[in-house]
Amino acid sequence: MLVEMRKDATPEEINGVVQKAKSLGLDTQLNLGTDKTVVALLGSNTGQLPTDIFALLPGVESVARIMKPYKLSSREFKPQDSVVSINGIEIGGKHIVVMAGPCAVENEEQLMKAVRAVKKGGACIVRGGAFKPRTSPFSFQGLEKAGLELLARAKEQFNMPVVTEVVDPHDVSLVSKYADILQVGSRNMQNFALLTEIGKSKHPVLLKRGFSCTVAEWLTAADYLLAEGNSQLILCERGIRTFETSARFSLDVCSIPVIKRSSHLPLIVDPSHAAGHYALVPAIAKAAIAAGADGLLIEVHPNPKEALIDGLQSLTPSDFARLMKELRPVAKSVGRYI
Ligand code: PEP
Ligand code: MN
Image 1 (cartoon, rainbow, N blue to C red):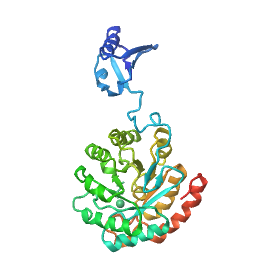
Image 2: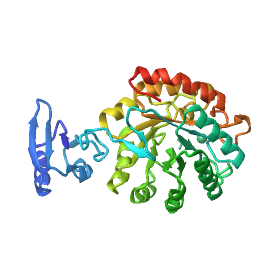
Image 3: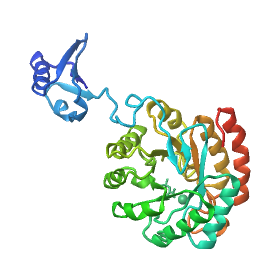
Image 4: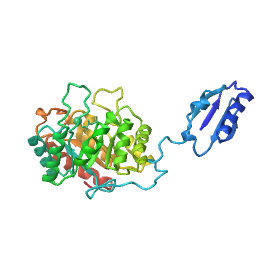
């Protein structure tokens, strides 16, 4: 931690910072600049100390942390890439894993048609929401347990693992019975009670980025899961909110190489929620693979015009099949395969 003193800080005020650090068992180093003094605080557990302890002392201008706020998800902690294996499908290796299906499970016919189409197109994991975190309480909230049961049927019929969202910590054990991967949605990325419960369950988990969260906040949220001993963790970039309104969200392509440098965790990209429109999905999906993503999460509906949720951003089965073909050479160009 670095404590920057004000220009007019007195020697007593500087000493006050040094004494406070000593009382907490920290070593200090003084950098006496021409204008101001900076006190470096040295110790193995400065990360656990609130910066305000020093920020509130007289003569202090600002306090900055040097260490990253996240630990277990960092590359410093684990230099080699983590690979998550779901029924033999490895996420985080050379294989680009595509998870696809409808936004929400609506009924048996819709789900089965969607799953048949995504399997034919080359997806290896099925997505479909049974519990939907809707912005409005008046919107369709999902089929809940009945939706999970339909997902179980699809999983059995098509022999594909399932990723589905859990929104309430009390539902973690229920959803875990049906889901191969628990999805934590963007709106719940910082629902720490939910993260802790999923962490304890040790069930594989897909942690979406909160749309107003920084990469550091996202990786710190990932630490909640890792701290409970759940290492079956996949990240999912899905776009963030910026001043731009021409797409539903702004896909932060930069976060892909940033995460790859700073974390060992596998990372997939959801181009559907970023785009908000089916016509934008293919280009965003290709950009994600080119930038180093380990997989994709794509919304596909057998009849998007009739979809109860997110029809505009859903691909038709034929759009999906075409996209999968177009993705193959992109994957190959970066040394991967689909
Ligand atoms: C979803 O994947 O169905 C979803 C709700 O996405 P997000 O949490 O990213 O908005
Ligand atoms: Mn959706």
